Image 1: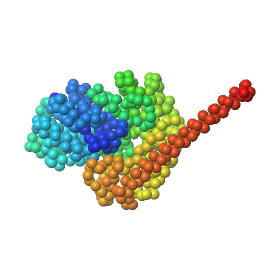
Image 2: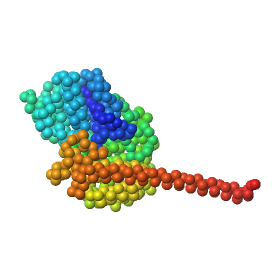
Image 3: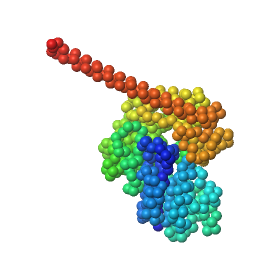
Image 4: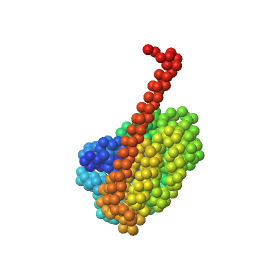
Length: 485
């Protein structure tokens, strides 16, 4: 059976979409570089390849393909089954892509949709969209494999957990949820040979390029009300880790095979389990793998000893999710982060010369102008190398979406606006959607001015250092040779 796996194009004038591999699907400015690696598609492709299939995989976003070029690649592959990763904010565009494919390729080709998108997981979706044949819910590597094997053998689809399909009478069927695979070391490394590997870009600070993205774990035990993947993909606070030796094996292979000069671990939360972290660092040092690496981490999972061990093994930069500068807002979000502890760890990170990126969001429950200002003040005080401000956007299926709907906080159900990039789709008791948009603009402006002041300070310090060295040099010469006329 011929299988096509695709991340279809998604763009607007002056903007490009990021979807597969991103926990925050949104439109980026065309001049930006952020491009996440499509992990789930690549792992699913690897599982098929391991089982003797030869799937075609195309990342239409990373390759900056037009819809016409993507369709050409699809037709050239002549697949029996098409698997497209979709998302909530891109869903109207994704459904247009499905309609185009169905019109061009006919009714015999099968179309499956996957991704963190609650809008398609209910029975009613297949009732209304007869041009879609299958929905994969959650992690879908082995849902896809079992579907391909069943279609080839003519077996019933009833036993494939995590799959939505139609029975022989055309009635939608929603199979039970799929239990998470506990041993993630049994999944082959993600397939990369068909992808534009030098086009992917995501890092926590300025490190050497080209860089590559990896996972060393899946999931997160901290159930923040706004976080999409733990809720929609993993179905709960499950946390599964890879063998550190296998992780370093993949690191070395990526460096040797592709010539990558840095690695970014884009785990939901990389640094859970101090002993595992120490073991990983020791393995990197034992193998003399001299490559800088970056991580997505929780600040409260760090201490000085661990950060020193990580730096010795090559840690160059880290992303910390802080979300708010007000402890009450953080507590209400379910994050369970002590801001005083976060401040201490961030300061240690800075003192060790490890670059750091901080993320903050506006619009969590209880947000006011005062709490938002605390967030801006905290962000500037921490003086990160880079920063991300966003508007908290409750994706359908998340706990925050249900909370916002129950309290009447949802202001819009135009899914294309569910990005948090510039527009707000919610309000709080104290703030309107337009208030949140204004606050986001204020935060970005404050950060821009902060950066300007920092650059001026750095230039002043460099000039003072140069002047000091100049004076010291002349003083030393006079001491040795006296005044020379």
